[in-house]
Image (cartoon, rainbow, N blue to C red; front, side, top):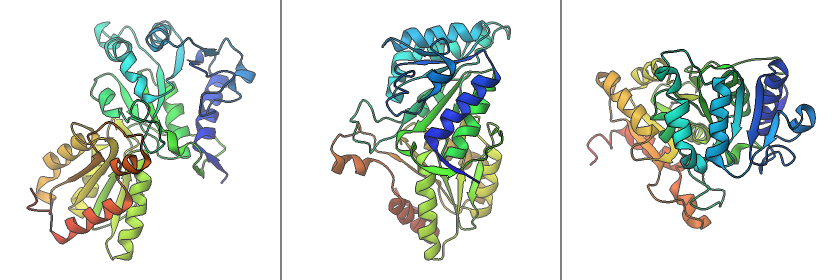
Length: 331
């Protein structure tokens, strides 16, 4: 099977869906000739023209609001939000309008809109361009939230999102755009709410989202050298969340660590850990452990920024303690 980058996978998915469905169009800042600052969308304007690949003014509330209206009236817009941090600017359009129209119209209106953006620290982009804000939108009923961890997931989830009749937010880790993975040439879609067991194990479950899947996989390799068998699971989507697969794994291993690059407090790790504690409590030999980013603005200093995000070595240290029973009575 061929290998392509995550960037190429996103580009390919969007191009295929635009060829298949003339109601799909793309809009955002610098998406046309520039192909976004990360060059993810390069070449699309040459094929589809400026009527379907639209450079917008620097007015996120304006063009996201336009996309909501277009989606309500028969189009399928893909909105490119240059940095995930800019979600703060469009919370009304996204969370008050897109997420609620189907409910408030009694099912008469749908908003088949995709908002694709990025996340992730350690790129030296400072506090306003390095946040991972998936928990913000996952909190809002009516929005679906996908977090691809490789080129394969990026393509399959994007195609599913474009065809979904609900608003979908996709977070891509900006440090993973050049990461390669096997991706089939033939068409495929990845259904939402179906987790991927990346590695089977018996002693502990490592649940990672987006780039933290790679962290979990590296940790599992290190743990294997110590005789600890770690199961690694990528939820793929946090809304909807595949509870069944996560619970099945935790009931088997009796221990779990949940890893996400968003701030740890009130975040994705808290929600997943809570559900596992509620529904698999009597199968647990230790508390579910959460590992997220530090609850601080992301520093610009490389030496400080690297300290804010979970690493494989930190996951290994915590897994080792869980399996040894050292964290059972930890404060």
